[in-house]
Length: 224
Image 1 (cartoon, one colour):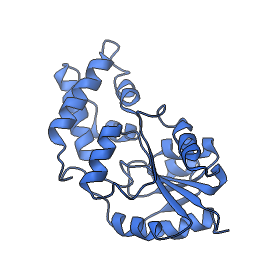
Image 2: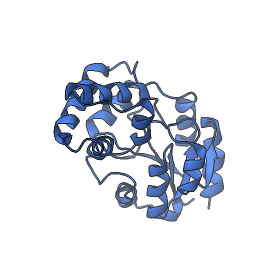
Image 3: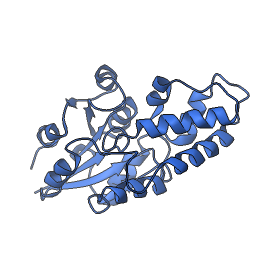
Image 4: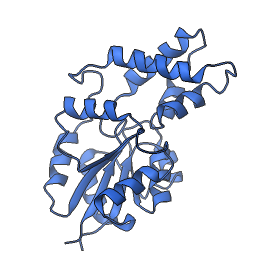
């Protein structure tokens, strides 16, 4: 049976990290006496690598020290994040769905995320998911989404071709990345971008619950 590669985004797809990201980003701006972005503005950039996300939010402040804001965000985030995963819970059905997918002989799981390697490792360990993924790509490994490089690196690492690959994510950046890499794209309705934005960016299907994913994956990348 020919293998398929299933690549998950992390924030907004596997874990609900919006509250901690919004709080840390606002704290970073306040620490530099800048008007903080709104909750909606911060949620809109979740999924980008941190420097790109901060630069996007700081665009209306020409004087903003982007590098210093990045550091302030990291400090605030680190002060709040805990190893017990209290601040970044998994979405309902995550463990069950990942276990089901892992049990399929043809399916290889991976992660493509705007988180740092350190941040991803912490979250996966806190939720007992470190052993679930055969390949993980982070903001430390490739340019920010929607660049396709993260997916391309995952393809190279696993030896699986793009037509046998599906990316699952909650943002338009995930969908654009998938399509640019030649992979299939599934949007999730429980994350941070609206369904219409996901479809406009190239989502070929929308999952409204984690339990929808196995069927949608096989529809786009069938067993052969």
